[in-house]
Length: 403
View 1 (tube, rainbow, N blue to C red):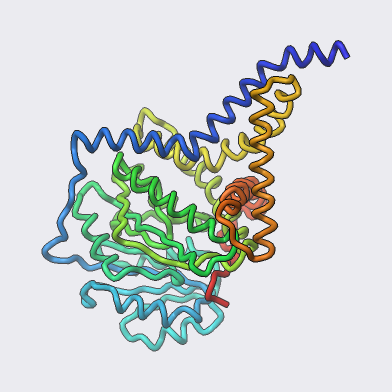
View 2 (view 1 turned 120 degrees about the vertical axis):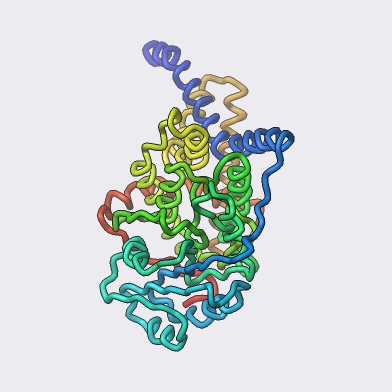
């Protein structure tokens, strides 16, 4: 008994340090960085407003690049969306790369005479499709988009406007999630992307957005680099490689892609695990960006916005509870209070999970549930990555309105 008491007295400072360090990391990652960004950007723009670049008098040729696998159900809707884009048809080339598709995707695309379709029967994943398809792109700019996302009519023009700034090598469009039909915690995906969009906008206004989402982003074609075929987050790797060359990633809210939420949380789970695995893979492959003496502000933004979320923060989040429990056993009222708050948060998350199982929506509960859900899947992403080394393919998540 005396030994246990002495041991607790000796280790108490360590647990206090772990608690406050973990609390700081979790708070900074999800709230503190956003607050800091807002303050710095506000000060910066008080001194100098962000420059607005005009649309070029002569619009450049652009390739709209769509990598797809078994998308027969969405071809007609996607092509109608492409037709609605307010960009001169003689300057917009539409390319589909449909490697491995064994449904009727290619047959349905054959009905469109002005579309280039590149197909091989072997499925090697999206990254390999990009690597192969880019050899057929000859326009100065290429816009990447997914088959199941719909673009606003001015998207291409607004992206081209961003490229008027010679420092911009990549343009990240905004991802919007249609939550009107969402059930339960799947609506958390929409809430998450609204917050992410706000952070990306602030990142851009400070220095550069930190990565792009594959639903809609564009690059200067000459800056494209072949990527290993097992790359899981091709959009993130490609855009950050361009930023590492000294170019900026512009965030364009005026160009956006809309998609529906995942069909259910099981499908969302598949997507989150793959993204987390890709994030961990990216952290290693882009480890050169940790050199803050070389990359300066980009390193700060990259570590704060991305690296922490995919590495240290989930570990600290789940370590906080047992550490807090040990500290509360000392009888300290403060740590008893923080333990109570943590337990209430986890109870709310569990209640959100139970309600989602019954297809019920409660905004007060799906947020803590989705937050825990995201971080659990980062841990699971580590095991996914270890199990699927060398494999760049994945089972795509089903979404609302699709079969």
